[in-house]
Length: 545
Image 1 (cartoon, one colour):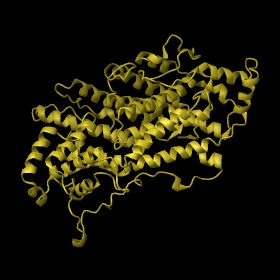
Image 2 (image 1 turned 45 degrees about the vertical axis):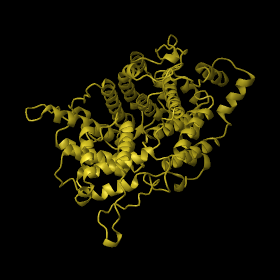
Image 3 (image 1 turned 45 degrees about the horizontal axis):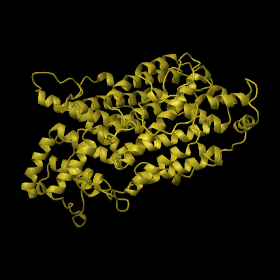
Image 4 (image 1 turned 120 degrees about the horizontal axis):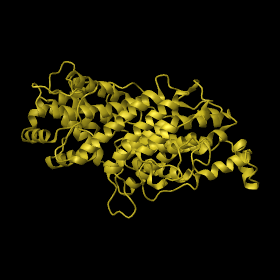
């Protein structure tokens, strides 16, 4: 849109990143090969190195997903190492599972990649060529689901999003077939099996939510049809709480997709209602997140928690996704110069609050990512840090062009985003390289937006004369001064971040709140209830998201 409005020409397709084009697995999906082209199985790691790779997977994924049952998996590994030839002669499902875990382990410990082939690809491709057709394969459904989850997540990390979505859909179907979405309480289901099923079910659920939302497609199962209990991890209270919060945020992600963006993909007056509901849902997680997973505070000698950072990034992404359509509409209006009352609309308390929430959450994601980078905890293979850097960067770019008072100087924030991309590129992440290129192109295009016109004239008059109340110059000055100086955070306060001193004209008073303390769940709900977006009557059903 920006390229067409500014450059007066369509954007060339080669300037865009399309899913599945960053990496080359060197495999076309075939499981049969002519005898002369039969690939050699990859060389397997030694016993100690294999244990190290498995530990890397446990560290990076173990608190987020239940990709393998450690005790059982390690017993099978020990048996395999006693007789590896048997697995080669007749590879079973565990051996395929083992290859996928090795693929992840290599990806996590690799410092770079060779060409367009991702780290661990040799193990992944070999596992896929051995993968049975699960529609006819009789196996432990829990291990089958874990194998499919591993394959789906690996593909997702490579930006093969369509393939990952199809793979997780297969895992979801198997889980539904075996009733894992239900309570599973009966005399025929013992507690051990029920707990195993809960563990794997909620992993499938979270992955399905994340992958479906990125594909922009409906969820595989509605939340009201799920009665499965949350998993419990004996002696691991933090892990139980983290899983609970992750599931809640995944539900909010689905709610945002189904309501804010909607089946018709249009922004109209219904946006007010669905935004209220989304913010209320976010509020239900706020206090629990801040209580159990606080982020590093000033003066603390403890490094930032990788788990806490992941949950806060997901939390802020929910806020950005909820409020971004409004920011997009203002940007389009700005580029098309289609609404002369843009500044007046931005003065509406509720409108400004929503836009500021979007901006502040984007800044918070970059602050968290910078802290992770400082402590060597950025994850370059899993896509979540990459997605957060891109989501926040593009939101701040839009906000800076909608009105300069929303983001005084976007350059330092964008530099943080580019720094995150650059470290991932250094580690061989091809997706980061292309994503960074897209963001830089967008920045270059938006920087060509002419400063002349209403905004420029208003800024000029502000410098010379503030003007009487009600004049364009006075409105612009008042809009700028109402936000205060833009903060560059040295510490990371609790989410979400709001302006502190403005009394909202729609009935939600902010003047008694301390900005650095964030909003509690109650305050966020009160704001959602008080929202009055009558200033957005210009929204049309023709505004496509």
